[in-house]
Amino acid sequence: MKADDEIMAEYLLKGGKMLSKTCPECGAPLFEVKGETKCVVCAEKRARNIVDANVNRTEAEVSKQDSVKEVPVTTTVCVSENLVHELEKTVILLCRRVQEEKRSDDCLILMQCIQKGVDSLNSL
Image (cartoon, rainbow, N blue to C red; front, top):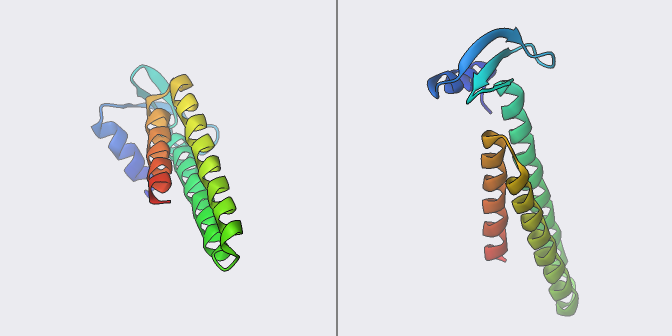
C-alpha cells in the first residue's frame, strides 16, 4: 500500500500540478491532472478499494469452489458453471463501466479488474 506522499509524488512526476486547495475528505492537496481537479489520494484509495473488493470477491468464490470439491461431482459441475457465469457477468459489467468512465485513472483500474477477471475465467 502506497503512502499518501508517494501517491502525490507519482502524480507530480507524471506532470500533475499540486494546487493550494485541499480535499474536504482527507485534507490532502488537490491536483490538476489533464485539466481535471481531483484529490489523487482519494482517487488512488477508491481505485485500490475497487481492485481489493474484486480480488476478495474472486478469492471468496474460488475458496467456495474449493470447499465444494468434496461434494459429489454433479454438484461441483453446477457450482463451477455458476461461478463461470457470474465471472462472465462481472467482466461484462466492468467493460460497460469502462466505456462510460470519464476519468482515465479509474478507467485503468477498471481495465486491470477486467484482466484479473479474464485471467480467473481462463484458470477455471
